[in-house]
View 1 (tube, rainbow, N blue to C red):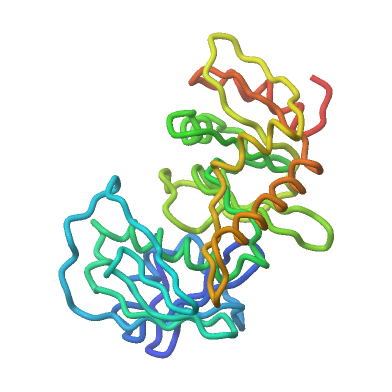
View 2 (spheres, rainbow, N blue to C red):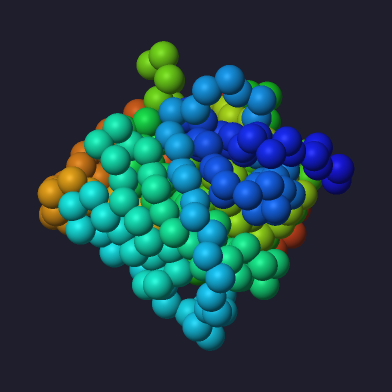
Length: 288
């Protein structure tokens, strides 16, 4: 994919739920690296809702891998991701000023930069992007489905096998509200499968994934959805004097509201394309 060259003053603007986020690493070299990495999610917006200013400094990373524990620690307006990988503070208006170790933008480690941006933006923009779910986001005919489950449930597998659907993301689904609707999109970060589609859809169904010999889909109730979905939903970290208990209480309210308005199904499937004919009529509201 060809990425347009950036002028020295140009920055990267990407979509995240219903918001536009601006990333500016200062130097053209680092902004071009961000442009290549986020080429699938960059938008030509005139303004941004949130801005991150990055001061890139030299320094070696500790030994990290995809399975290494990482965390975003917050205290009032300050944060530290890693720790010691990216640190800084959030201004009262939501803009972010951060210092980052340069090696975090290297191809071998940029998955960690994805995670930092995803966690931080979800935290500061929680009002605009109320739910970030560990699940695949698929769509057809403008109607979207979330397929979720614990690790190994088959989220990325199902997304890869749903050839007839638009793949908004295979691992991170974003739900936000706009004009009374719940819209589904994919986070612009860290897809396991890079060949995915952008855009958004009206959220029509939510499905938990269950391995089975025979494909079937069963309607579930709102209480079961809340119980299963909460562990797969990101907890926004408190800033500006908040606390985790308040953050969790707000998350529970948001998940319950989602469960009361969006139909929930249990999708029992095999790791092949046979599940899509069972799910598609439910998603598109067609008669099988």
